Image 1 (tube, rainbow, N blue to C red):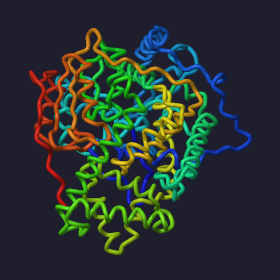
Image 2: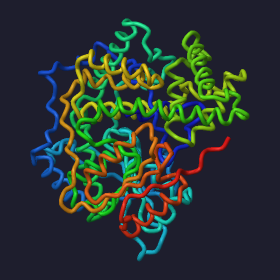
Image 3: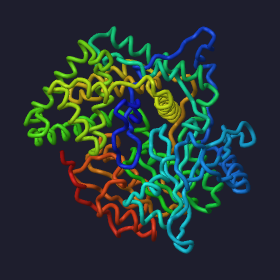
Length: 544
């Protein structure tokens, strides 16, 4: 799944309660291969991955770690100034094992933060822990929904402490890296759509070097960068907070983290809301899920073009989808021949424009930049799509997010190792779904040569004690297609599915739609769900 992007000079686009979660293609990353670094291991030399499925070692290790965390608690303090979190948000650390099969072995620290409930002591129902997705997203901004007086979350905030955390490998929690951040953001990258076999070979080389760079820079962490381990971390955080059961909100990849947690710890769940759902089927995690995403992105890209065409009086990009697409292809061809401003080629264009299929909140801003370019203002596009090489912290965060994304998806599941499989599937998909297919392929291709053992995904299912889970999904979501919500709904017995009809924004619970918002509030405050699944009308369409 595509998840993070370089920080742009123009700043992050608005989202539905999460960071902008688009990504630079991994195939465009140059990895460091200095001779002083160790070579990536052969298959026989790869470190053994933590074995969880069908064994009890990790379950016992998680219980040991949780009991230890419950005794230790969290030493809450004012947040460090460079974390940029306003008071009264407090910050702290939770210690977890790197390897849950060895709970008394090497430990890592996870950064957590919180803000207390805004209601009375009697109204308080505990902590609500959040994951925004990725893999690779930081949840530390979650408590700012209270300090920013976010009206959508005001009722929930009266009852719950809002708790965020950086998952293992992310941000301040034992961060991993695969390449020098400055090299990661340099532009322009190769056009992701190959013109020849030579182009494909070049992209394959870059993907292989990226995988090698991950091992060189973060090899000790890689075998343990899995969703099940992050789920175990989540249970340790629950214990450290003094919570007997977990209240959880997960968006995008955070839904898969919730699904795995609910499978491994069904009796530990109190309330769980999952929004914009990754298909948890073992067959989909992760190779097939990314292919499904390519199809869904094309559909939502066309939805945006239709909207732009309807608003031609504002944007002057054409009054039909075909005319808007022609403008896009012309822009893409121009950037391929001569990168705009010397830095914006086709790869950078996709990195910027894919925000529109992701989020309705980006529709106006992306169309405005496009319109300005067609009218002769190239600087607006450069400011929006080119990396800011002076943003050291932002670029390091982008590189780290991409590293975690790659590490988790590559370790969670077995990927095809035969290039012919990738070439066949993506060549076929590209014919009718050209917007994203090849860039998504190169981004994920490091998993074909991943230097540590890959695992069998958890079989997500209902276990003893799992309460009703609330599932929220827009019908035309590009990043997490609708079938994922249906699949999880079938696997979690007693769950309820809220569908936002004729909508496609990724991340529904952060949008203003009373049909959705009221049901999420009711569930979090009372535990009650509707007697049957619900279909809601779409939220308001953006206006220029």
